[in-house]
Image (cartoon, rainbow, N blue to C red; front, side):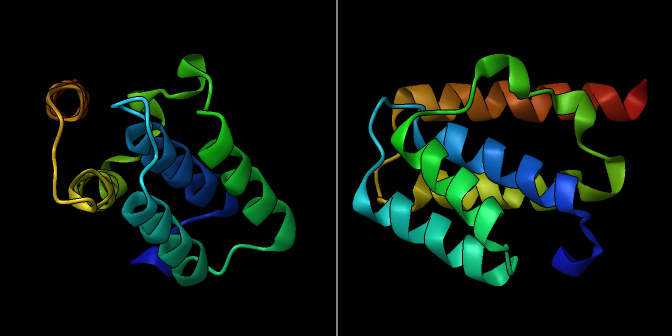
Length: 113
């Protein structure tokens, strides 16, 4: 399924994943490790890697996170990856839980629109 993602979709996925890693205002080592695994699994090139690593130092701009930009066919993949980064440190913060619920709702609304 990951190979079905275009370059822009791969970066969009990582933008969301990194944003959720920042949800509690701290990127923990386990979350960073999950992002590094994603970088490898997605086979990101050097420019893409640099961009994603930058999002671990400073979160992506909120206006760059548009749930409507996630194709319906990839919504489950995005949610799964985000759920994994949120759970990576074994402690799901209230902010992470709330943000995930909002994203899930927005993606589901987009399916019915």
